[in-house]
Image 1 (cartoon, one colour):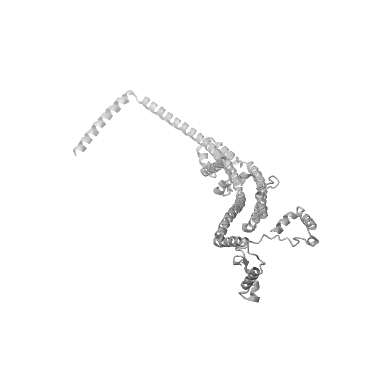
Image 2: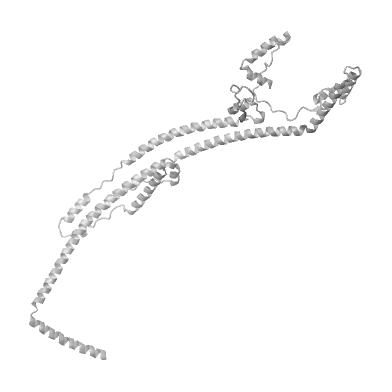
Length: 257
Length: 161
């Protein structure tokens, strides 16, 4: 983590000052030591380990026991610990003072609390972290979805563009239809007009002809009537009456039969 | 006077409706209704008018020469096919439209490219639980705290916490 801090500070020319400070620091040896010249690791920080290093007796890391195992077996570190502590106590290299008792109580209490509640506190804190990460995930997913929607919309618009020619097709169709309709209309009108004229001539002729016929008939009738003299009229009427009587007798005879 | 085969393109009315923007819907509807009106009118008119029976008229009409005269003039009458001034306009419009569409398409492609680049960038960020605050500021620049404007912690107005 410190390396990354140096990395971000490097641009601000803090690194030379760090080296200069080292030069002014105590001891010549430290002036020649240059800090953090290893290749800066730009890869993302590796994930934090899930669990802390294993410890025995709450204090001593497991690595120590493993380190001594090949030489001294399983009991080695314990024997070493017992021996060392007895040695310090007996030779009074370590003096028992009131501090000792307070140390024992504090350390004991801490070990007890951590052992009992450590896991649950860790879970709680993890949960808080999870919530933050979930929120960030949501934002990320929302952006992804937004961009995806934008891409899909663009594609849909491109597809629509392909269909744009229909608009002009409709217009052209309309034009062609209108032209054809007017053309046929005009043809039909010409035909109708000519036919009308011809029919008119014919009907005029017919009418004249009829009028002449009627006139002639009237004239003939008038003359015939006019030519029937009075005498002839009386004779015709008598004959008609005689005929009628005859007919009546015949009809009576028939109805009797 | 012979009828001609009309070269009508088949129209997909669904697509026609799709491409019309909302504010031109009335014009589109009027186009559609015109189309239907013209179709019905066309169906009502026969392709050729019926032929006039000259022999019949020749026998009936008394005036000599009238029918012959009519016949000659009628056959000589040629109704011109109405000339088509408007398809050219439509074609011009279509050409311009094609140009605009091509421009739009290329812009759209560019936009799609950009979107895809952004998408790639967002998809490839490291998982959040392995990020540091610096990484977060790179991916979401709006989370960067302005240390110049607010030099003291928490580097943002307290209301925004």
